[in-house]
Image 1 (cartoon, helix red, strand yellow):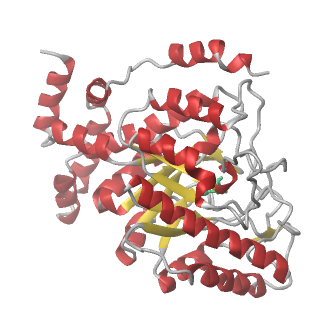
Image 2: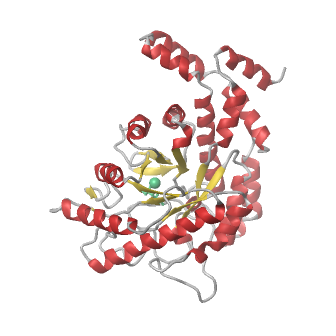
Image 3: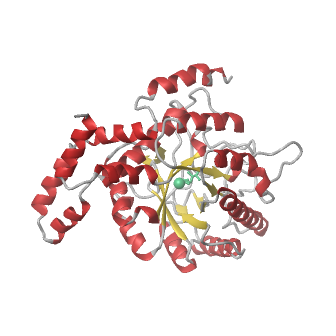
Length: 412
Ligand code: RNT
Ligand code: ZN
């Protein structure tokens, strides 16, 4: 009997169908953040990364052009099993000769290179307006700025991005998740906390006043507790965003790097899905003050995956969001994306109905014992089977390092 067949039997004994788990784990779309490949640089400006987010490290071989980024994505994706979408930022526009446009004037055609890339690979596209790394970010503020010119510029950017998102949905035939995150905030204690939030709400209302097809474009709002250099106050706090999305009937976005260290997004998912049809997630691994380390197959990633599965896999838009410039960037993509997929498989390999029953009958002793038993069940053998069926090798260090030697180190 093969290792997979043995594992299948063991899981059957626990009341779990591995075939079903493999199918569902592979079919769930995970949106791949393009910005891991070039340290969130983008192609539309020469500005340094701003907005309280930082990449650290100078590992050789970062992508400098759309062609390089696409080639790197292809290499990474060949090592990641399951259904993927492409997650772009507006700063990744690809301009033709003499056809540059500022953020308040970008058009769908500036993303045609990405549409071709995605369509050829059967991928949908998700999108993010880029409210950072740009000279129109004034005093750290965008949509909440007291300066009307600044607000108008960024509101227009939001509208342009909504149009581009509709274009992506139309061209790929898959829904587009458009996520709004602004860096706006203050390093030190502000005197007026309400004003910026009021202006942010008004700017968002203005962006959303443009009609769009809500069955094909899902606009999300991402909150954050603090940024680097914006430690005292962020305009888009959790309460602001939760209330805004609920009253405007758009989709909440939770990034698990954006909360106090003892708060967990895994515990928030059930509440959010009781009051919202959909929930969008940025999966990352926060470490102390940094919200963006490579996702690992760790306890919180697994707990997030369990909650996604328990509350409805199809109701959650799953995306990755981290950036590590200190290690091979391709491996950073692959390790993080595999961790997410493996966590989904792990969650699908639990007898969740039985576990719920144990809880409802207050048989917490047995629940704990079962939980511990599951931890050492042969997940690895089922994972290997998923990789085999998806045509993805289990080993990837050699492949990544070979690409590094042949392609990445030559980028000087
Ligand atoms: C920043 C947010 C945001 C960004 C990307 C690049 O803290 O997490 O999602 O990481 O938009
Ligand atoms: Zn995020």
